Image 1 (cartoon, rainbow over the protein chains, first blue to last red):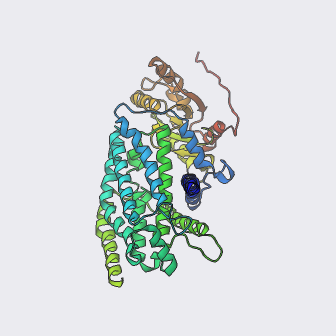
Image 2: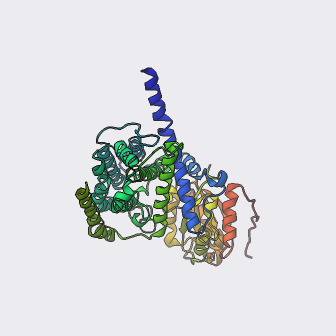
Image 3: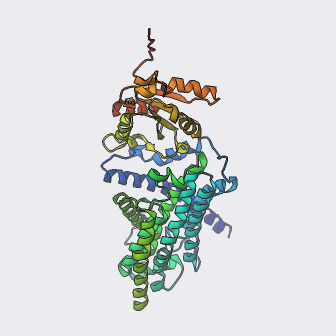
Length: 319
Length: 153
Ligand code: SF4
């Protein structure tokens, strides 16, 4: 009993828990930066560590050492709370996604709903943090984040719950196990849903075609314009963890998640799938220019929501 | 740690845009300052190094002071171009403060502790010179020029 509890705590803190996820987040930021740089014919970070691999970590440590400013007009509580929640919410979500085996660290029937809840809460935290940090730019950024939510929320949920229908379960671990065992990856059985989910995750992560809440060239740095020092470090780490979360969702719900192939352990297969999704996201991010907020809303309602619904109807007809 | 990751904020205080284009040159693929961990940020709140161009016109002075005080410590200023270093050809114009030294005098009068400054002269300086200044932060390169004050008779 005691050893069981101990091993659970170790799993929670080290592998595949906290420490592993943080390292993975730094590593995936480096991969993304290097990949984007290579597409743009640049080198990317080179001199920090071998091949610049320590660059995200160096950024993090540097930000921890900087002065911590709370603007005079900011709401102090929320200004402190937002960066913390920006990091903890995606971390919590990663605990319920299977990474090393068929079962996630914490898994229960209905954790898919919990995941959807976390995503919406994240956007609302972004909105609150932007709105209450007392700067015009951050206010505009926060409002834009909330407006964008109206566009991508519905197709996101539809695409998220699509894989649950053939597996007839609302537990992520069961869905990915079902897909791995029946060799029916979501990518093949419901390709439209996969596309919709990728688009909505790009919007959720505020990556390039949808980086409207952060639009550097229009509203400085959007909702995180007033964050400095430790707070900014947490926000940025949270973004990286969210990146891992997005690729993990794609890998688990649509690519079968961790599965044993021949003698290769599941974690290797999972990491390969996750990084494939990460590179897909990075590729789309580099390829596009930013949309306007009205273009995003009308595009989402005109094309993406109908596509998600059609996928749902097809699924219902088949299964 | 600032040596490993330098986030720069670009502050134009009334320059002719020549220097600014050279800064863009540093960041774009040919010179690619991201190799050194340099990143352009939009907000002075995120910045470590402020790249200041232009002779600091009286119009832009208040905003420049706001931006500099908004940046968190430890911060540095790189004065880019003859204008920022000493006023350039506008050193005695009524419309400009006239370079970073006169600007620092005003900052001290207002009780703001002025950050350390690195000079990059030239009109405009070559992108290599700006990269040299950034590499000087990292300890990769040494100083090239000495200070010499010219007094008009
Ligand atoms: S130093 Fe020369 S190029 Fe730079 S802002 Fe002044 S006049 Fe323009």
